[in-house]
Structure formats: C-alpha cells, structure tokens
Image: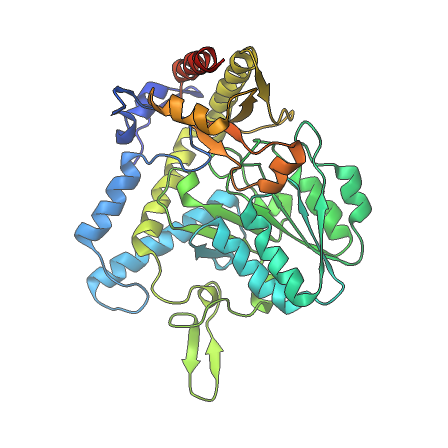
Length: 415
C-alpha cells in the first residue's frame, strides 16, 4: 500500500511520491527525464507494478469458472477492483461497473449497444467541439447507420463550451449527449452537471468521457446524475489496456450485449442463448485479469494521496507554468479556460510543434505534439497542432523551469 508519508497535513511530499515511480529516475539523451506527457499516459507507482507482478508470480488463473485455490484468489482480487471502482465514483451498485479496455471501448460499447438499439431515423446526438476522436467517430457510425443527425456544441476562443448554443440545439429529437469531463487538448473542465441537467430535461441520456478526470477530479456519478461514465486506468497511474464503464442499472439492463462469448451467458443452446446478469452480460471472454487486479492499487494510490491534494498541487504547477511559458517570445497559449486540469497547450510562431518536441526530447523533456486526436478542435483554431505539457502529481516546479529553459533555447536557436 501507499506510505502515509507523502501526504502531510493536507500538503503532499512530492519527493516522497517521486520515489515511488521508478521510471522517473533515469536519464534520457544524457539528461534527467522530465516527463510532461501525462495526458497521454501517466507513469506507474511501485505499488501498481508490484501488484501486476504478484498476480503472475503467485496466483495466475482464470476467474469466475474455477473452484481451485488460485482461481478463487484471482476472482476475489478481480472483484475487489470492481468494488473499489464503485466507491471511487460513488456508483450505487457494483453491477453498474463494467470492465473495458479503456474509455475508447466504453464509448464504443454504449454507441454500439444503446445507440443501435434506441436511436432511430431523425434522432439527434450531441457532442462538443472539444471531443477526442474516440468520442466523435463512434457516434458518427451510429448516425450513418441509423440516419440520425450529429450536432456539435461550439467552443469559444478560450476553449469553453458555448452553453447558449447547446440550449438552442437541444430538443425532443436529442437522444444522446456525449461530452468529456475535461479536455485532453486544452485541459478545460466542462460544466458536466449543468449539461446533464439540461439534457435530461429533454429526455436525453448523457455519457461523460472521464479519461482526463480520473486522476485529477472528484467524481460522483450519483451527484452529477450522468447515465454513463468512462475511465481509463493508464491515465490514472494504472496499467494500460483496462478501464471501466459506469452505466445506470436500468439502462444497462435494457441494452443488448456488446460482445458474444463465454462469461456473458447463462445458458447456450443452438436454438437460443440467455444472457448473464449485470455486469457480466458485457464482459465476454477471459478479461485482462492481471491489469484489472493492479488497477485497484491505482485507485488506492489516488485515494490515499487525496484528490483535493492532487488537484491543488497540479493547479499550482499549471498556474506557475502558464505564467512562465506565456512570457516567452512568439508563444501563444491555446486554451485559456477559467477552470482547467493540468494541461498547458501552446504554439510558437514560425516553429513547427514537431520540431519543438524533438528538440525538447534531446534535452530529456517529454511533451506531446500534434493534434492530440482532436483534429476538429485544431481546425476550429486554424492550426495543425500544439505543443502540450501535461502535469501529474509527481511533477515539480523545477521541471517547469527546465521546460521553460528548453523552450527558450529552442526559440533562440530557431529564430
């Protein structure tokens, strides 16, 4: 388990936290690694890594089917993660927690199962201009198949949703609203509770993409009253290839299965198959057992540090980085919303973002460059892409200073 020492009287001991992440203590291109690509994937603490290794070393077995000791131990560990996930997002029941490969699969599950079952010709689905491709393409596929219409909430120059336009395009035809909790490209924290309330007033269901929220924000699905919520483990200090889909029980019960196979059935004959109870109706086949087991320890890691503490530290870093980077010559910030998670996106006049990324990497600084799987958003701003620095709990002001120093050198060299 996580040591109690990293959080003292509500303030985090960042150096103690950093010691729990082996990957941070290495050199890249002859310099100490500065990892600022956390919106793409966060690094993993030892407690998560050890849990993964322990599963394979000590009790690797298939789950739910065996009566031998290893199978029972693996099943217990797997289901403990479901219970932990339920508490983490305050779902009513463990039956509302479905394990997926991540947010992308969670959205596709809802689009394929709920969308194809309940969307009809002439219906409308609303997304926003801030969405990741994974929250655009699945809804396009449903609309094409069902002859429905996709509507888009515009984004302001600051990177905030235009709620006035959202209210105008909402109607009785609106059946699904799907938006992110926080933008992966700009860091904007969306007013999801207000969006959900407005959507429910016209009878629409709401899916929230929580990929960029899981490691940074308090999540209470009952309080926000969303119908579906998705998380990816790898963006919240957990393993790759796993995540959760939360869905209200009454909706999940009406939805047809997404995949067919073992585990999701009660009885199979050549004439008819009856499906398993929730959540197993949506968990066909042998799952990613090891990574789900380790995911519990990522939840525990975040809980023990405290989400308020994490958010406060990251906000302090973002404020400091925004102030310093914005003062550099030829730099233009992209996305200046009032409420943000720790994402700082920018362009440098006359220098391609790809070149900046490569030159920073030569100094051991890892940032993300490109369109960040949000091409429509980049088009909205009239740019090809940005440089994106994104923060996690283990990042420091010293690393921000190294980023700024690197950027100054790049700008002076290229200008």
